[in-house]
Length: 73
Image (cartoon, rainbow, N blue to C red):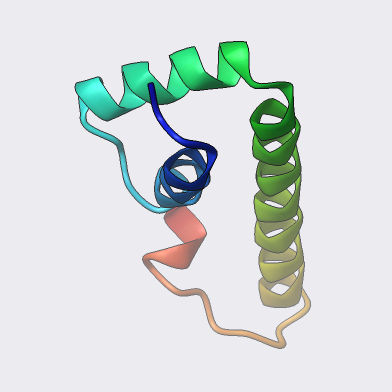
């Protein structure tokens, strides 16, 4: 079973890139078993979405130039 430390690393990594199937399955199993990591995952996702929303708003307001990599995520 994954440690919480490794699980948080995978949670963060999957926001930037797709995880290989084995890592994805191990993380999913860990999140089902560990309420603390499940909460952490939800918080990371919320922070990630907020950051993307802020970035998009700054582009729409003309404060930032569209970035081909960041705007596609």
